[in-house]
Image 1 (cartoon, helix red, strand yellow):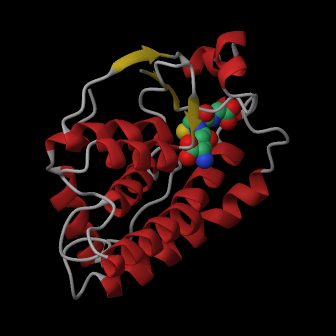
Image 2 (cartoon, rainbow, N blue to C red; image 1 turned 90 degrees about the horizontal axis):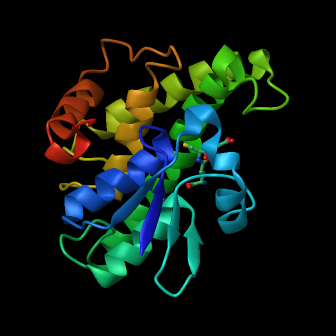
Length: 204
Ligand SMILES: N[C@@H](CCC(=O)N[C@@H](CS)C(=O)NCC(=O)O)C(=O)O
């Protein structure tokens, strides 16, 4: 199988961290997103939505969507478990991963895509006001998360899961989106230090 990989872009990075946590090595096809390589005919044929990452299985089957790709790898390579091991834990991981993606990563991405001049060709129409509106939404989520993390070390419980991956990728993406984590959110900052120290999180 082959992973069409967009490098440091947030969603390809989520899958990259997931694979590194699992110790899975597969063929990667680097796609230069800066040169709009994700809009090339080869990628469009695999994913008409022209988004990365894309996983192509040996029989040609295509899987898109970062979480769907991660779920596939969780099924074929169950350990270490990153989606939850019991019915309750699976529900909690799902809940937090959705919150991290929909309420946080989505807000950070909207701020970046609608404000940054380099995103003009990506986000059409670019609406800078919408980008600005999303900055405080991302911070509001961090404030909520800070109170949650008073009682535990990781996003969905007492161990690292895919919810930490989604949240950490969104957190790192705040820098190019020009959003700052308020320094008083000590639990969030401590959590970020904890996860950033994992080898899977290093940017190569
Ligand atoms: N929901 C998709 C989102 C994929 C996505 O938007 N990927 C971005 C890179 S982070 C992309 O390919 N953007 C290209 C574009 O917007 O033209 C997923 O989880 O994989």
